[in-house]
Image (cartoon, rainbow, N blue to C red; front, side, top):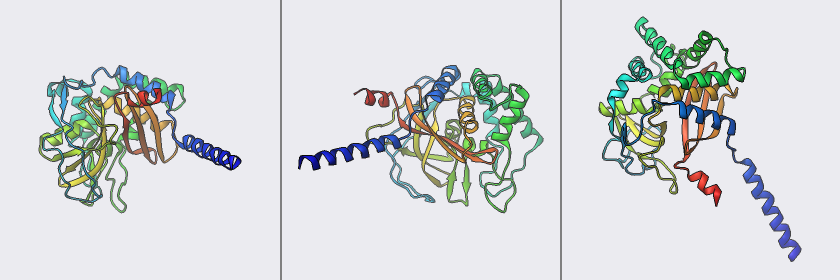
Length: 313
């Protein structure tokens, strides 16, 4: 009997060790680089000072394609935002000018004007002048993934983020990485795709095009108003996104830098990396569309250093 019991214990130990081995490990190198970017992101909005969140209730389950979801948040997500900073920080003000350049629905060919091309050019110039993108560029050059030539790096960013491509078959060029991630799109009028940016979220909410329904989180990891990443549910132009996610308060250059690094450091069509940034542990998901970005978003796993405290027990 003792031999049989020991055998069962041994098998259980092997099984459990296999489970641990299958869990993704934190990418320490990228965590270090991303924390460098975090420290350099001096224009990041400060919670409680530059903006105030009201996370309210936990959203319920909603199927993809729904037009209705029970509302667990009677108030907007953003109680207030320092709009003076939105207007005066160069990268953010130039970013905001890009948000109305796109057709919301996939399948509708994008028409890019000379003025819009100039706005993209000015935005990229502003991004490249930040210490955040300079550090990202330095890292990518050290890894042989980007040219040290600034003009070539700018062209690389243009290809990754702004090159138009077909998201929906049998249509014209109807999408880009930037549009999908930062602006958001609707598909067939029944599905929100992309839309992972807090500034766009705030502006759409302010103009009553978007309704925040509540946060999405595990019981042991409830969000608060200081979190810089949120998983959430919302409706936009009467279409519901069951679960979305976004960095909160960060600058466009920080988000572009992080996702550009993940994109260039991997060749798989779909990549998920586990990283610790500031007090948050998150997965960064990047999906390619050829040489351009298909989508990219953070998925919050724990915040306020909870993952650190859990491992210290």
